[in-house]
Image (cartoon, rainbow, N blue to C red):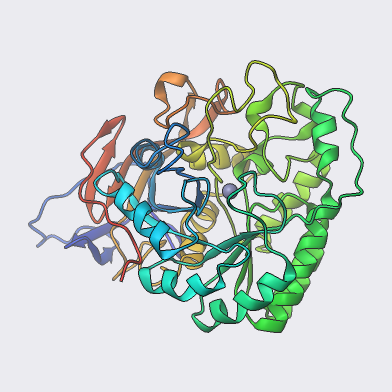
Length: 436
Ligand SMILES: [Zn+2]
């Protein structure tokens, strides 16, 4: 069992969906049922705070049923849906209600929601908070969705004092594009051309701006999907200063390197892009030293034509990687190679992301009083990703054909087994989190 103090042989007593006690062994006078998981690892359920479900409005891209089914098969017991790319986008109370209606009865795992911050919707912030969003998401560059425009510093200056008052996080896609940047467009299938179209500097400039505003407004800032190692030093300095700044990176930035990506392999297109090995080695170091807080999938699917699977056109392809189901094995495969331990996985996938969501007193650790949400996984076993074993809507993922270490065998939510080796044990009345 992976406990906050390390890996130990132990037993956990669950009562009414809550961890009632953690024992070194099952006491002789205990008469209740016992499930023995042998040498498998019991870890607190995974929280993925960065998932694009796209329903309503773009349900042909992904939906609540398929995304949450894939999530639970991956050991994810709580996910938070992004305010785009559904239609309408979650930037008003009215749109949030539509999203809640769309989610109703379709959830295989617990789901929370981020609200969207766009130019002109500062008046909706308090209403969205009262309705239960867990924080806000904003872009500093074009989001890919026209109805979700990016904010400017002026918009942030209006919104950040309000968000700060409620102690909620503002998640920011950090790229400040420079219209004068010239990239090579001679070959649209070239990954190098795509990579050079979104330089590190865009991320580094955006992060510098958010650190400055974080200091000024004392508003929690969360940098989503950090890709540029060029920002590690400024993030470390801001954290040392005590600013309320947290950072995530994505599995794909830790698993792939630009040098290995083939031209036309658009399944790996994401923004910011996957960079070179030297950069990614530094991301690994920053994760291990705690400068990067955790890892989230940024599951962002699209149909095959929009991913330009046929044409291999990186410039036209939708930027987004489908991977929610493989959060654990992808990270473990790469982590194991670097000599990391399963208890680090628990920090990066369960404990630290639960903190971003404000659920640090209920989720992310195996400890008395916490929700009995667990993933049982085998750290020794391997499997090869095959389209038939993928539960999200489109069987497109850059991990197709990859052999990964770490097999999710069971998932428990509130003490109830909801997934068992490819069997789903019902939707189990999963709830929407944070709704007041
Ligand atoms: Zn995203």
